[in-house]
View 1: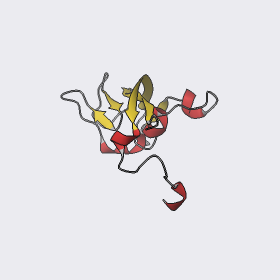
View 2 (view 1 turned 30 degrees about the vertical axis):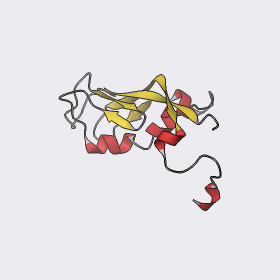
View 3 (view 1 turned 60 degrees about the vertical axis):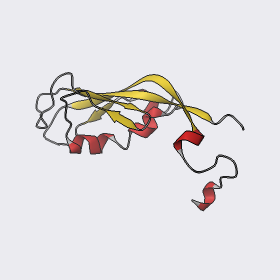
View 4 (view 1 turned 45 degrees about the vertical axis):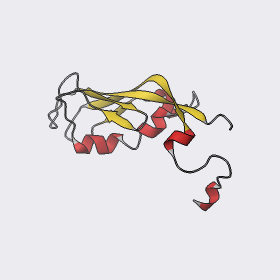
Length: 116
């Protein structure tokens, strides 16, 4: 069987305080993304609205991107509350290896994406 490995960056998402915040976040609040698993430190909670703003960006930040792509350079995301001045920093950590055969039931060979 051909090598079916690939890698994704682990990510750390940190709350960056601003002048006003209404979601009960505190300095030091963060979570990590390892593969498809969100990992929250014990006792921390996150606003569903903040998560909703961040989630679409995370799979792209996990993948290797061209150095000129904004996804490679931009790390701050504004809080979705227009009255809040906090931001969220997405940092790439080390890479983690995965295998296609362990992440999906769809075979690697003979896959026709045009029928998806």
